[in-house]
Image (cartoon, rainbow, N blue to C red; front, side, top):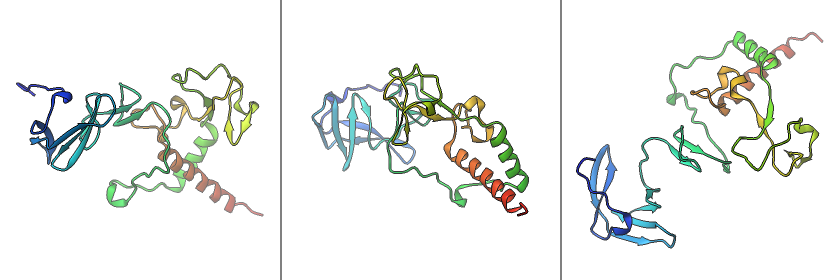
Length: 207
C-alpha cells in the first residue's frame, strides 16, 4: 500500500491500529490486547474479540491468505501445498449436485474405454520422492523386499516405498489441472468406472 508505514509486531501495543479485511474492504481496527505466548516471535493479538496469532512475522490465524500457502515449502504452486505426509481422520471431496454444473454421465461405451485404458496403459510404480534424501538406492521390485504390517519397506532401511502412478504415464482423465499430479478423487472414480464395466462383462457371460 502506497505511503504505508510498516511496523514490526514486537513494537505494537494496545490502541495500535492494524489492517483487517472485512467484506471485501480493507479496514483499520484497534488492538485491545497483545501479548507474547511463550515462543520466540509468537504473539496473540486481540482485535474486537478476535484472536490473531503471529509467528515469525506471519499472520497465521483468523486471516485471509491471498495466493498459495506452503507448509514445509517456500515455493507453493497450489492453494495449499505441504512438503511431507499429512495425517487426518478423513478427507471429503465436495460433491453435491448444487455445487456442480455441466454434469454429464458416462455411457456404456465410456466404461468400456476406461477399462481398456486401465488394462493396457496404466502402470503402477513404487518409488521415493527426490526430497526423501534419507531413502533410496533400492531399484528392485518392492515385493521382493521386507513386508511388515502392510507397509512395503526398502531393502536399504526402514524407508517405506511409495506406491502410485507417474503423472507423465497416467491417463489424462485422472491428472490434476496442471498435469503435475494425480487427482485421487478422479482416480477413484476412474477405477469405479472400470469396475462397473467388469461387472457388466461378468454378468453377460454364459455359464
